[in-house]
Image 1 (cartoon, rainbow, N blue to C red):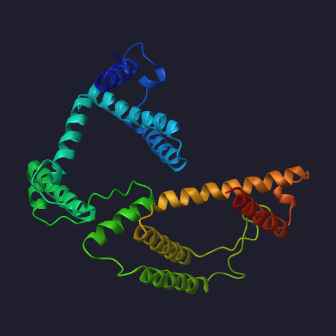
Image 2: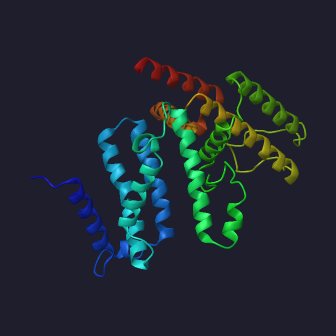
Length: 302
């Protein structure tokens, strides 16, 4: 009889404990919460890439790598006496049940939007109870209405943070009435950026990808640079909202464009290598011509 899901999970937990135990793996034993954080982010993105590629075999392995991060943190926490994997699982199960009263209780939720509204209300109530349980200042803070934007971590990637912030605001009606309003906002923000560029030192913004790094690059006053950064940020925020309005993931959309750019540019490099040259030796007209060829090549292969 094959092992059960529970037995397989317990084996993975036991392996992680063995790796961290005396006589285990030297690398695993010296890791800390902070040293593992970058791997957690890396594994998350590898999961997303496998999904984008519809590589289901690869996805099963990447999900295992992501689960390893949970086991790693839980084992380290067990060692310092804060919590164990059992508490992680208990809290997860309780959260799933508590936040789905339309499944495990008598609350009605016929649409996905109703589920989201219920979910946010439950989360807010949970947070209030945690504050009240803290006593002292926490109780006083609990009396202050919680912001609907509370809980959106500033540590997450900026595109995802913008998407979550605008989604939370949209839940209470702070949203554009139609997508045309977003395009109007995009034009407005573009014009505001162009107005700031009028103050850019002569001869104005120029590409500086070729030649010696920084050569001929205009020195931009700090105050102007700050205003330009703000305007570019506003443009990004509008674009994220357009993606949200269309029910698209902005991070995934940009990742796919990044891969597309990389694929096409590498096709150009290969064509140039075949003629014994590098991109640095080609003119801008040649590069543009090759870029258009790369686009046509992809279209013909679809």
